Image (cartoon, rainbow, N blue to C red; front, top):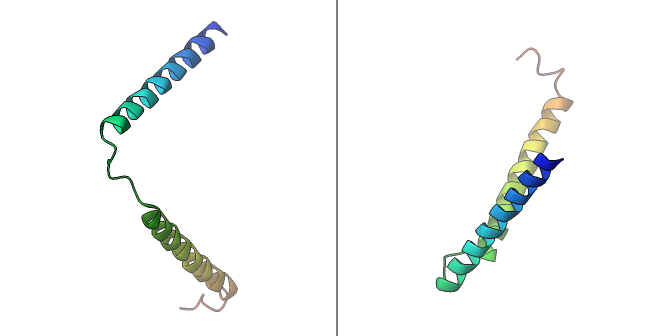
Length: 71
């Protein structure tokens, strides 16, 4: 139990230090080139489209799997 508490304390301490560093950096350089919401929307649409295409291909292959064995 003592070992787990020490690990948890170290993890929380490390995380709080990282957050503090990031906040300091953000206040020092307010324009860090963050990803815009438009870029996020484009990426989500691209990944969704790719998954839809892959799912359609998988469905067609599963449907016609018996017919495609001779190819």
